[in-house]
Amino acid sequence: MVVCELEPEHINGEVIREIRNCTEDLIFTFVRHPLTWYRSYWQMRQNDPTDRAGKWIDTIVDLPFWEFIETVIRESPGYLSNFYEDFVSRCRAIGKQENLRKDLDQILRLLRIPYNRESIFTRPASNVISSTEKYSYELALKLMQSEIEIIKRFNYLYIPQEVI
Image 1 (cartoon, helix red, strand yellow):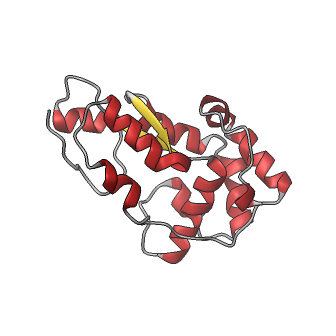
Image 2 (spheres, helix red, strand yellow):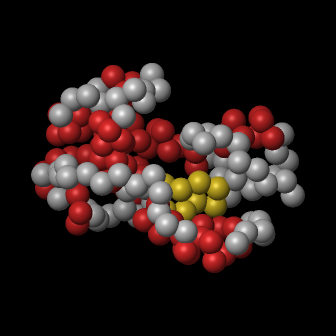
């Protein structure tokens, strides 16, 4: 089995199959609660205004946080559900960002990919950006309703305390 890092950026299962000419779906991915995903995406773009991929969401990311969320709900409900579909459609295993270390450990064992288990649990977190932005309870519920596919599919039937 060949294990390699393809790109530092997001890459979906269809592209991996084309690049690697995969004969077996040994592809895995991680999903994240929509409320934390949108907040993190917005915050990362605020911290680095030059980081724009030309996607629709990047055309509204400079709005104030609450307005950004309202615009997503109004103009592209289910945006993240559609985005995730490209990643999860070809995956044999899907973990949750909220349980990253534990899920990665289980996935690598499931796929029989060699790895340093201790490193997974001892390596300091990276690419973590804190945000002081909060959702109102009503806005959180509206966003969750607009992303109901993810909410149900990945059992995100709760509001993370840190976002309210």
